Image (cartoon, rainbow, N blue to C red; front, side, top):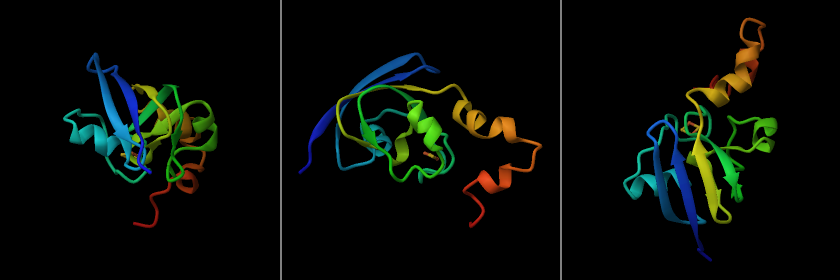
Amino acid sequence: MTQHHTVRIHNRQQGTQHELQVPNDRYILHCVENQGVDLPFSCRNGACTACAVRVVSGHLNQDEAMGLSPDLRRQGYALLCVSYAQSDLVVETQDEDEVYELQFGRHFGKGKVRAALPLEDD
Ligand code: FES
């Protein structure tokens, strides 16, 4: 059964706050865009981390977020393009490339990046 949750988004780059009703059976990013709010994105399939946010409070389901390590999920990051709201949520946008750098930054130059990137099969 579809339930609606209140999602509050702080876009830190634009200095804007948004409060929206989002159903629990649609991707959050998609719903937010449909309501006229622009957020960063690129791949739309959970791989690139462009849409990553910090979850300040609440629960979401992001089983399809292949591009986000379990560590970073535990630290409270989420990919909105493949996330479903499970409760009311408060999220804020990441710094530019924050999640990408947390995941891959320290491995650059050590030969681990290719194995970690989920982009090889295109
Ligand atoms: S837009 Fe690429 S992970 Fe969400």
